[in-house]
Image 1 (tube, rainbow, N blue to C red):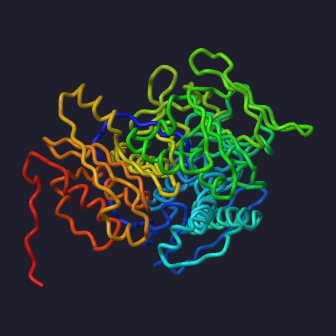
Image 2 (image 1 turned 180 degrees about the vertical axis):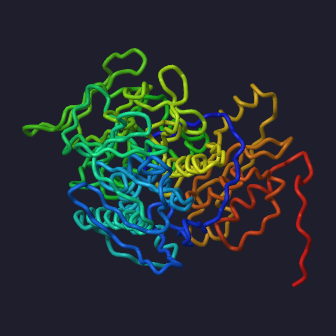
Length: 563
């Protein structure tokens, strides 16, 4: 779960990459597993055409875990490794696996635990809590259950068991990631990684390795504004909230982005009252305005949630000596004191800050910008003089381009393509985002205001198409007809500019649109695609069919095959 979504309006053309999973290293052939790409959730059958089985060697003295496997090839002449990755979160993990697939001898340095924020303090445990909140919300909805002919007694929960579910899931996924790295022969170097010079990294106390190429993938940490005192008990960040050490009767959530919205879903389902504190004039400022308005009607207004907009939490003081948490609210424009809240707890969900201190960037003349490592469109690091630093890349939250775990992984794969000799530029407008509330929100590409701003600058027309979940058979069967899908496009060319979905399983549905953008497909290319009936995917089917494109189909349809 990530808090902010920074998106450039430029749209570089995606470059297709090779999908060969087969690599040749020395005289041995192996088949690199390709399903362990994200969070290690898929099991893989390894087919090793070699008499040498994988051997795991643990060397605690040098803080190094290595697994010799034919897939992690010999390094380039004069270097310890072809690629060293600083940070073993989802971005670093994705880059490492793709590097091995490309035959690169790879090491990954981690100063904390494998999996980074997403697995240990973000996406993964939060989904466990949201799974609980979704079921609680359904069981508590008497009208919803009666519509199915079901009678359910009053639903309750065991707080510790819920917390254990989140913790156990994180532990399982962390183990999967670690095992996938070891199985492929990626060397895991334990310790804080510091760049000490060109193509040279120190880890731990005094261990130094060299690499032909280096990727910075150190991620981010919760951002806490000045004036807010976090005690980890009554004033908390998402790191603390995921432990679910207690469920307050009344909690204030500072920030109404992805993190704040998801935690409001969890806390209200478990019985808390929630108050949002938002600096901007409307809730959910990062979403398409029309989607945000509908989401507020469904996710905020009917629940035990109130809110203050256009205000800053200038001072937050933890509960102490029997006194509640106090929050001083000042007007975002005039900075005058407007109100003081007294609540049982406060969750600070104001975004995330890059974790780049201590990287040794000064040793290579790189200056961060608000903590972010400056990079170009190929994730190549830029120094203080505006020049590229040879053989150094930065991916994920640390560069600030798009603070999402899967964006980090995609950037890492793109970098590996480049260091393997194939140019690749990632189209960030094709990367989807999702908020896992009940119902879910998902999006890819531009919002309607962003699209119209771009259209005004470039001189083209923008059209919008919409479909409702109320017209979808599967949604109605689930008694979940609340929701819409929205398509923003160019009627003159059929280019998809953005797709936004609010409704049942929106996070799963968005990928048809994101993949279409990534592949450069236009509406007239995909409106004839067939979707199984009855499925939620027909929401997207109807959406594309309802678009009015002024040009004929742009690509030829394959010849019919008699069956």
